[in-house]
Length: 93
Image (cartoon, rainbow, N blue to C red):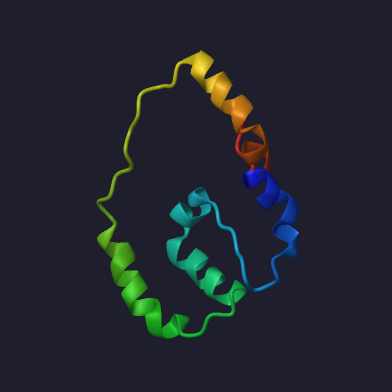
């Protein structure tokens, strides 16, 4: 499924699709949301800003789940199976 997506992603008209990494969103939530509105041509960001800011503030105590290390063999298997996705999205393999 993702192979086809990567191959045909360029066919999606400008303003209909925008990617943002979780890491970038985590660093600048409001800024990335504002960018998203702009890239997709969505109206009303300034009106939504106070609600978005309030929601983002409510996430201040949120902590990501922690998971145990993945066994090296399984890590290699995952990296092999998902190599193209990792490379397309800039994650280390």
